Image 1 (cartoon, rainbow, N blue to C red):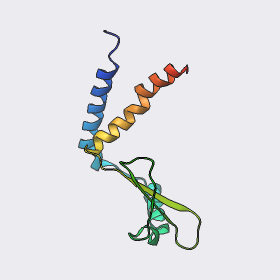
Image 2: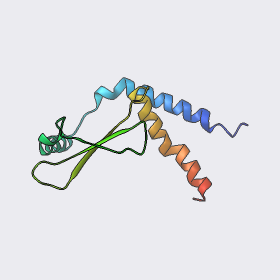
Image 3: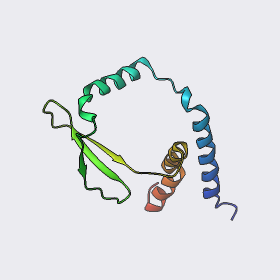
Length: 115
């Protein structure tokens, strides 16, 4: 059907975005404020993120391993990480996730009764 081309259009958009990411990701430029924020986070959690300090958590997904640790110094703030092995380029994963937030999500929102 001429009007039911969402999948074809979405695939073409994802492929184009993936190509853009692959070609230009090294050109990302961070502002001084962003660089300072990243440095503050690195310093804040410096000793907490070392291997051997992580506690394995039960994951709701068999394909994802989960772990947590706590900020050093007695804080109750937990730090978590989840790991999954994906057989795809990171640019393809980013493009797919971005696409989910566009046409696919709008369609499901509309089907659910949204405006």
